[in-house]
Length: 186
Image 1 (cartoon, rainbow, N blue to C red):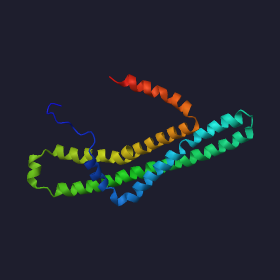
Image 2: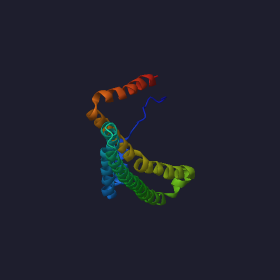
Image 3: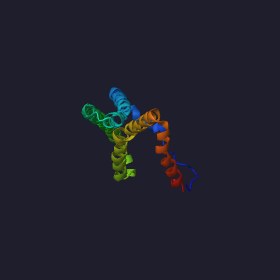
Image 4: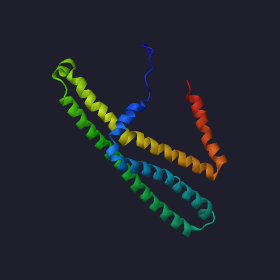
């Protein structure tokens, strides 16, 4: 940058201030984190059931067991879909509720401003800041931080399970990622 000052990539102070608005809804916030952990744990179960089906039951022509494993997989898929829907619902609700509270607080602040502030600041600036910035904060809750944490937990859970099942095959599967990381560098 020309000024020699580096811009912060991530500001934990602002994140802490945003999460202050979520404190009244901490039960729902912790519920969404709990759902993220639960979904991360059950994510590798379906692929493992497929592995069991192919390795043990189809290879040994035990087709009656294949039917039962399929029923279990469909049931697990329905349960997982229900939990994922409720997880998405909670995070979206949390984001919208925090945004509502922030808009009320911003409205009260704007209404209490001195009239000279409106003469000095273009109305478009105030409007842009009150709308766009608060919508960006909504994305933190509904599509951002909690979803990223949930996805990272799922990836870690799948990798741990893969290493548990067959660490050699897991290393072979992960080998292309190192090549992609090397090729990505400028």
